[in-house]
Length: 88
Image (tube, rainbow, N blue to C red; front, side):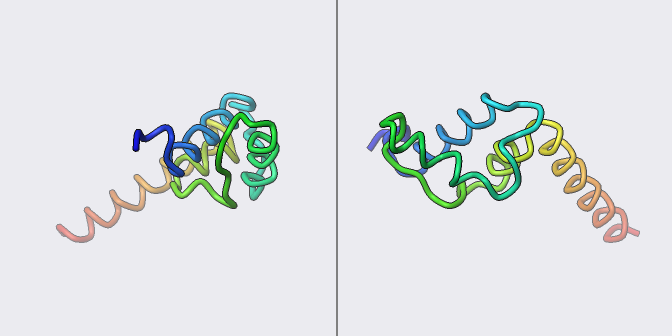
């Protein structure tokens, strides 16, 4: 199967569409399914689930670019701290 036609491809497409619709604020924490389901019912998507099955896509779609950037910065800070204490 070609990726866009797979379940994960449809969830990626949903996350992209939701992020594009609200790039600064996202659709709201915990609202991925609530916002994805209407896209499925309208025939825009062939599959929707309660989450995106990808942490980064989930954060981008639910919290927008600023929220996802904060999540990535937090993860990077944790990794940097771990790296420093590991090599100390």
